[in-house]
Every structure is written in structure tokens, then in C-alpha cells.
Image 1 (cartoon, rainbow, N blue to C red):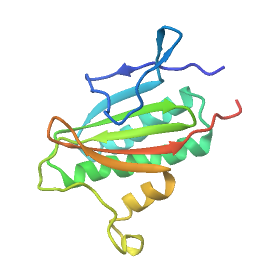
Image 2: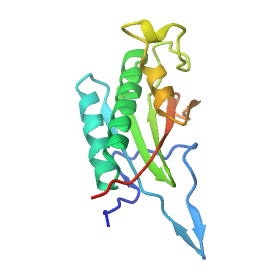
Image 3: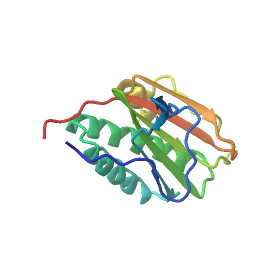
Length: 164
């Protein structure tokens, strides 16, 4: 049976308000496998975010296609936070619940960017395909304001365990 990490937060990242709540089971709180981290808002942090997400999903026993999809979505959301905000750091939280993994990327805002949205014709452009890909890979995604003044972009992807 694969090992599971339970709410191991690095750098004091607050949980996403859209993430599922901890469930109650027979009088005790059942914790959802979850991890979060902050990285500096630099291009070199994108591959580090992918690496951390991939390592975590492997630890949770995810099937390789799930790991690949999560890596791509983390990369796209992290890159958008770097390119479209004046953030000094970007947060990423992954939560496993049921047959889904939720990715929530939080920026610090600034830079005049509004909530991200898929741009018309973005499939054919060199830039602008990120949210189109996020939408294609996820079962649901969206945005919300972060109490710290930034934006949280989240996506729920299907989760299946690998045969190890």
C-alpha cells in the first residue's frame, strides 16, 4: 500500500477555501492527503513546482497519466501566476479527495491582472493556451480571490491509483 502524506505544509501556506473540508468519521476528523508549498516568483521555480507535484503524486500512488496531467496543470497555473502578477512568491496546494486531485495555485496579485480566463482563439496561438489546456485536462476549474489580495486558480483532475 502506498504511503500517504497528511497536511504537510511548507512555508505556512493556508488551505484553499474551495478545497474539500475535512470529513467527520465516527467522532474523529479524517484528514485528506494534502501538501502545500511556496516558491519564489521566478521562471526557475516552474520546474521545481512540477517536480514537487510529481513526487507527491508518486508518493500518493497515482497512475503515471495522472502525474503527467497534474505536472502540466501545475506548470501552466504557476507560469500564469508569474507572468501576469507582481508576486514575489507563488503558492501551490494539492489535495487528494475521492477520485480527484485538486490543484490550487495562489499568487499575491498586483500587476493589474484580472481573474484569468480562456482567451478566444488561444488554441492557435503560441501564448495563451495554458487555461485551454487546464480546462481540457480538468473536470472543473475556477478562480477566487485570496484574502491576501491575490488570486487562487484551482483545478480538479481525475485521480486513479497506479498498479505498483
